Length: 366
Image 1: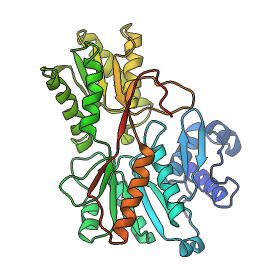
Image 2 (image 1 turned 45 degrees about the vertical axis):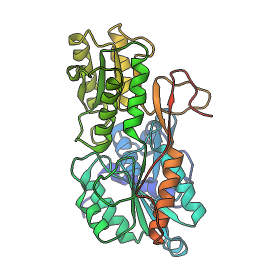
Image 3 (image 1 turned 90 degrees about the vertical axis):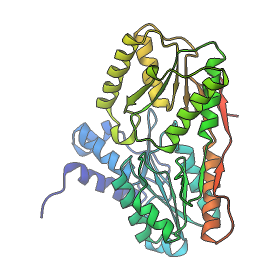
């Protein structure tokens, strides 16, 4: 029999320790450096093993804090599955800046309603998303909450679920034109208000910054809101200033190689676009890259970057003026809609959850 690669062996050993309770829900796992010594493997091997656990939905990895076991993860015993019905959750990705609180609010709602949650991560891959759907349906979930991957084409497996009247709710990214309940933020209004915060300061040469992704509804809505803000001021947005070819914020393009690539792109942009005064950025990760490059070029100044989302940290102030989406409300509302769908009750087709504009250096809690 062919021997498993080292990283899979480490993955299986840690998985067993999670299942036996050696690493309990909420417990912190050893760091990659600690795993190197513990299993006598390379850092890359340890990293691959941890990435597999995250993809399995068994752990959450928080930069600067560590990796923690997720409660009610995919390793559900047959005994508990018989006692509690299952709800499937498929996330594109989650991080401290977005979706982490959605995950926990859905998990809490499941516990309150007597359901067990089974998590899968698609990591930006349509193929992974399809497999996750098939696995969860085969497992016997009562319904699915899905954060769809960035893709201009809808997943055919989701279309089939809709035709089969299987309970599905989408979050964050709406499948327009399909009768699928949706919970998320009004991205047009949020982007419009965020851009206006820059225009009010007197900025006019403002760049829209977003990833090189398919023309998804979320990104198009944020672009539309950006343009509407200029129209509100009797202006027209200058598309020649836009940066739309970055990739490091996309789940399928995460990692040091893509960060360096995006930094090179932004460095070149700053050399050739001296007139750009400010930036409206679709995602926090890209805002961080912009700030780094602007500081290197000696061009960074406070309040010239506004973005969507930001990590919440107790007692710390916001790094950028940003749109703070109500992740807890998104999670709980999506669960409410899914339960109504499962029970055959009337429900709205879409719920737009209120957002806030948090100013730079304002605390984004309470």
